[in-house]
Image 1 (cartoon, rainbow, N blue to C red):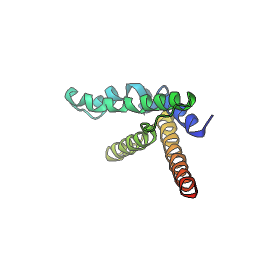
Image 2: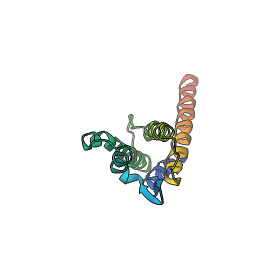
Image 3: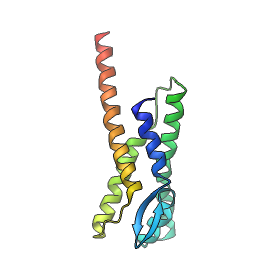
Length: 134
């Protein structure tokens, strides 16, 4: 099993553990669109924008199936990049609200996304070098 597959599995697991600790009330990863709307006092019309977060575990699941089935798919969605972007968004929101209540689910996503990005980038560079040699 590849390290990127393990990172993708960690990203999926991260959506089922607490991400946000708000006065001993925990919000899980899959509850974030609703929790962010409540915490940021936004109108319910902005809720569809937060559903983008569900692409992260869907991309991870797609890539796990593609890697385990040895598929020859040339284009794969990058859940690592999406995870890093969403993590940065949450960090900016937390710092702008002068609080930092992120829980371990967020940290699992953040570390898995960054490690997946680094590994994927190294693998792409290695494959490009191999193509040049051949």
